Image (cartoon, rainbow, N blue to C red; front, side, top):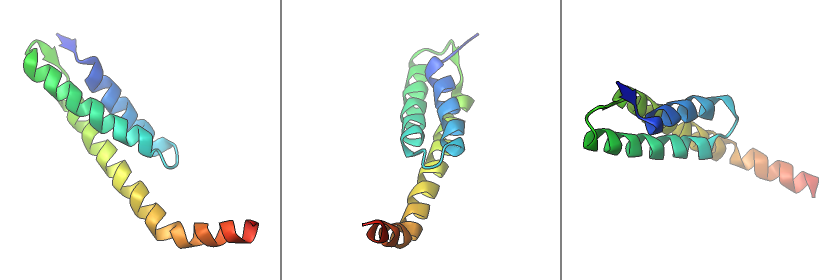
Length: 86
């Protein structure tokens, strides 16, 4: 059985989005590639990797939500720091 390459990429990006601080771009790509993989798998039943795709989507979503939440909570502190630097 052959695994979908998009599913594997989605999983890897989902994991890496937690490793790098503010990995929002990797989280977004994990979600996109996950949905592309699910679409590919539904069209080609011999492909496997549906679980990888879903895990990549979930991890990417969690990382994106956490990143946006942390930035919105800490934004006043970032703004204050930038004003001090000026």
